[in-house]
Image 1 (cartoon, helix red, strand yellow):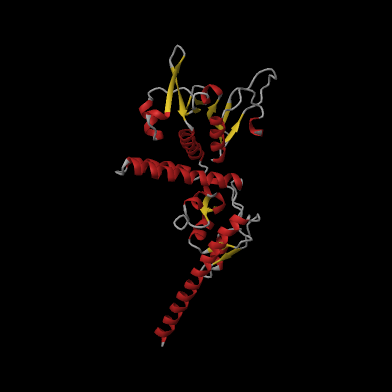
Image 2 (cartoon, rainbow, N blue to C red):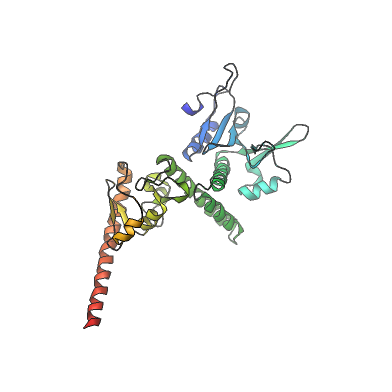
Length: 310
């Protein structure tokens, strides 16, 4: 628990440990900041996304089954994200925006001016709400495709699907955000082939495509690479592949002048582990199968052209 080594409050209970582990697995940093006063206890644990403070954990919360205290995506008078409910905002807005019901959060009123604070019930709802905060942060900073996820969720919510189908689709879309976050953390938000490190230009690529993978493979970050958008497009169409050892290979139908326009790229800058190598082998096999078909089609076209000339 190195990231909370500065924490000196009550011991985390089993619920708090589960919630903390789930948030960390989704790419959040769970930290307790050091105090300038060595005699002062650090009772608060911060939930951070890309360095942004989006939630708070402490014993008064987890002892009552609350995963975190929510931090609103709006600024207070000091230009900081606020914990207290903004004006002209209410519980119905919170439920609509975060796709929660009344059982998944609790409001606590404090102070003479009756400031209202939102506490999230349980690990699952905490993870869901924190992921949406992460999407807001990344969208605001232009750091990736998380704003696309937020838009997709809004479209799902507006659709005529049943509540059950909406919930299922939203969970899948949020899961894709978790997959991307895990790859970003593993590769330090840098494409291991091209070196591209602009997050808005990076894509979380499934090695074995989503449509062909089982439920476990779809969620497994080892079935993924963080690729530049142009390489991802070719990788997805099996016009580019990587061997088990990370060597890159392009389809014959990709002209050399096009390859030059793709910018610098090359062998993966890491040695794939056994699990990722297995996924890469499956992608490579499918690439070779499609390459035979592409070559055959190109040959047939050439033969038809020759016949027309005769």
